[in-house]
Image (tube, rainbow, N blue to C red; front, side, top):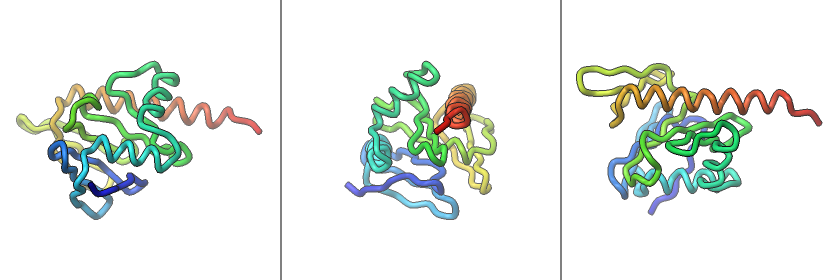
Length: 151
């Protein structure tokens, strides 16, 4: 298995199957021999937590525990949301901060990122909009808590 940690330039981690993921970064796209959940677990650990800890944090902050968005790294508000249950071995993860638009074209659902990259995702447009709203709630709560922090 290869190791990859998401970063500010990561747009999405798209599961190809349970052993291969396609990484989209600003200006770059490549494959990693690892499943998307393992990549997110490694990324959370790299930034000092665990995927389960991040999920519990989301539940404590906004009350969501199913298909919950997670704060991978809080100083840069790096929030990713899943396209399906994380128990699903072919679940993909999207960086909320880079999503510009989402739309349906025929039977396909597309995400357009702020750099113009468009990717097709296996999720209904309604579910995708719901995931974006959940991530926005988490982002808003994180920003509110940071602004109230006093030392």
